Image (cartoon, rainbow, N blue to C red; front, side, top):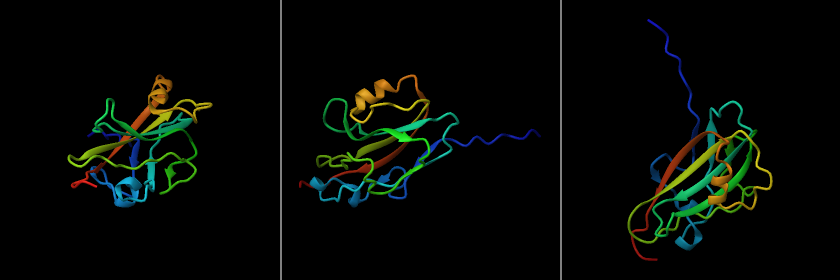
Length: 152
């Protein structure tokens, strides 16, 4: 019987919320009664050759064309494998704050890049995604959920 090789996949996880579960109130935007504290994120099994990472948090369910981007970090050093909860070093987090109604899906997507983006600090999500084309070695997504059931 041949031995099957175990391939460990690049994976993004959080101690703040489990995949496909509700994001806790502390990570929700202040406008929606939360504390706007960015969630803890950590990743395992980054691909060899990754020189940096980029993170994009997107709500495709937002009622605007293209959805809403909640956090963009264009250049995370390859030496890091986690972002602590409330990580002040990477500013710009805006927690979930959907209109009342349906559940929104928040896609935390981490990209392993074969390059380090210079002057990437001012990039918004669409420009970052355009700039990393051809440089993504692997990507992983963690989805969190949030819904407002009554009007604020």
